[in-house]
Amino acid sequence: MKLTEFYITSGLGAIAIMMVIALITITQANRGINQGLQAQQQVINRGRVGQQIGQAVLRDMAVASVSNNQLKDLLARHGFNVTKNNNSQQQGGQ
Image 1 (tube, rainbow, N blue to C red):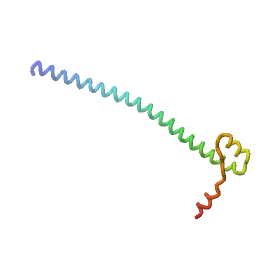
Image 2: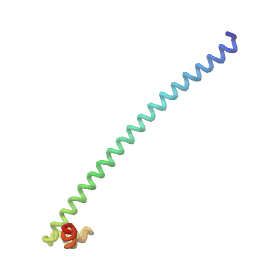
Image 3: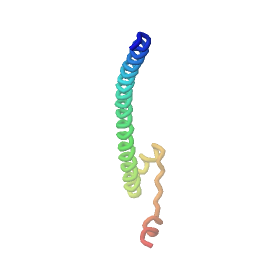
Image 4: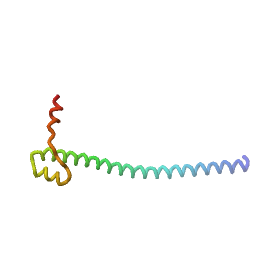
């Protein structure tokens, strides 16, 4: 092996080692980013569950407010106007 061939192969080997180190570093950085994104997604999912619970509670309060004027007034003070819907039961039965 000639001296120039030795330097070329040594240089290529060094470049390959640097690329492997860069790949490992990037992989570790991506894992950290992925963990952060997963944590954010969990917060979003908990928010969705909370929103669904809030909607269900509000829906139940609206149903109960039909026969309870105090509850109806409370909902109205917070911007929720409740009206009785007679058509929903009739349409479901047909």
